[in-house]
Length: 112
Length: 113
Image (cartoon, rainbow over all chains, first blue to last red; front, top):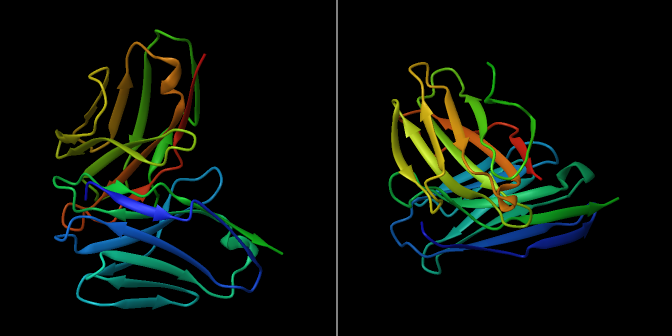
């Protein structure tokens, strides 16, 4: 969990379009992959997570996919809405002794 | 159920002073984490406390310290404040048995002038 690369750093989409954010991790022992959403003036909130024994998980308009071979996991938001505008962080909690490592964050802007 | 609460919401200090930030975890959570979120730099891990003990710390100087009280609330102290300490300080808590899922407070915005 020492290194999590996240991209893009910023993303603008038209309302109704899809958005995809990708993270790459380095530790092959990583087995839990959460995504957090941070709205302005608030702390990050867990929105979806996935464990390494599954390849995809969906919750209404959001989904997370995991490719263990390539060591990356992605957040997919479909039918984006203005309230989806926020900063999204991926995280890798496998850094030993609970040193959760976060990606740099992606600022998503949904244009009405 | 009340979420993670942090106080104060804003704190203004001058260089060289000390700052004390406080955090109350969700009821039933025994682990408390502190993160620094400086502008444009993402979330940097500071400290992890569990059952009153410091379990791990990130790459920060010793002037960043803290403690966890018997009721699992926590305090972050920053001594000899420097201008670059200006940031949002976030506290998170988790259950002992499901400590991958972090629940964050809204943070304390520290400004060092």
